[in-house]
Amino acid sequence: MRQVDHFIVGDSPAATRKHSIWNPSTGEVQAEVALGHAALLDKAVATAKKVQPEWAATNPQKRARVMFKFKELIEANMQSLAELLSSEHGKVIDDAKGDVQRGLEVIEYACGIPQVLKGEYTQGAGPGIDVYSMRQPLGIGAGITPFNFPAMIPMWMFGMACAAGNAFILKPSERDPSVPVRLAELFIEAGAPEGLLQVVHGDKEMVDAIIDHPDIPAISFVGSSDIAQYIYSRGTANAKRVQAFGGAKNHGIVMPDADLDQVVNDLAGAAFGSAGERCMALPVVVPVGEDTAEKLKEKLIPAINALRIGVSTDPDAHYGPVVTPEHKARIEQWITTAEEEGGEIVIDGRGYTLQGHENGFFVGPTLIDRVTPQMKSYQEEIFGPVLQMVRAKDFEEAVRLPSDHQYGNGVAIFTRNGHAAREFASRVQVGMVGVNVPIPVPVSYHSFGGWKRSGFGDIDQYGTEGLAFWTKLKKITQRWPDGGGDGSNAFVIPTMG
Ligand code: NAD
Image (tube, rainbow, N blue to C red):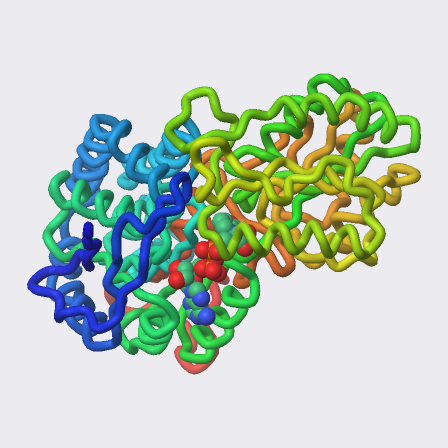
């Protein structure tokens, strides 16, 4: 059976524990990944400590050349990366290419590192005094990533961290760890020194070793909220810099004046694409007014029934299987819970099987109407191809629902009314807002991050925020007096006069 090993310099100690990697389309175990431990991490950290100072001292233009080369290599390997990714995750190939491409866009931003790393300078802040600032790398950064974007999220993290002069240790999801390893191989092939980017596999044991390691000053985490909060609490208690992004339950508000055909098309993709396993999916639709709800439902039903489910290599499939049998069972259990809570199951995806692939982890598309904020199935993340409809009586209720929800990752409003859209965008308590844009993931030169239980910590991912996270700001005040002193009293706090 194919073995997925750590990507570190030197030999990895033999694995005592392993984790099975499924092919979700067939329901077969296709590979095994070694699960690491603290001693393995120590080895990776020791290597990173050796290579990082020279990398940090390499001028930013030369570091940028590595990023440019890496971009070229990813583009040249796009098809094989997407195939490997989809075979372990289950998302369809075109969607897997999107996963790689959205990470690549952060690499493109990182190609501009000489420009964005330039500090600030004030000449003549006082007599003979200049003030300037510079951003310096932290040393060794670590990233702990989820299964649902095995290419994009690692690149968000190590792309920014390494371009800024850090070494990086990545701990990807043990469910689809092959693409992260492949990315690290390509990064070294692009000219990064061996050991600058290493991949260690593992579960809680490895994660705890990372959080407690004294030589790792900063951790970026993306995954579910309870674990995000745990990592944030334990990491910051260890005096580390931590950003930890969690789960989501994004709402799509449909105003009475929205173009419903467009909304149905957008919702089908945003709720069911990637089998709903996206933190920026739209699993809750909120039509405003009963009339809007009825019209929307009438159009949604045939659109959902027309969705095509297939194996991840099927070019005509809208979405593929979910990641594991446990996750399939969990999604189906949530549909049952919603039913028991009084939700109206309009389209039921439970018990779905794909002909010829009866052992695959497929879940049929599901539409649940008459969902209310009191229901557990509304409050929690389902992370599957399940769309819940919560009917709002007016605009105020539509602003309140996502604002009061425990998660605050993304939200979208569909309307032709500029005033309503502007009002909504300014008042809603959610980190990323789409106006007639169902999946408002910001471009790489802005920054990504949710609010409330979707994001712990103060600094977002990538863009200028990512740069701030992976660097520390040094502020220098210099004076070059012309001799003879300026007659000021050295015993009072200096001011600039
Ligand atoms: P997960 O929380 O199960 O795993 C994430 C990482 O944490 C993995 O690397 C895993 O090995 C590690 N981990 C698992 N259990 C752990 C434990 N007990 N202690 C320490 N570490 C542990 O998440 P997942 O199922 O891989 O990914 C899906 C989740 O990620 C969803 O909740 C989704 O919303 C969220 N997500 C959020 C964003 C965002 O930007 N907010 C983006 C993508 C995914």
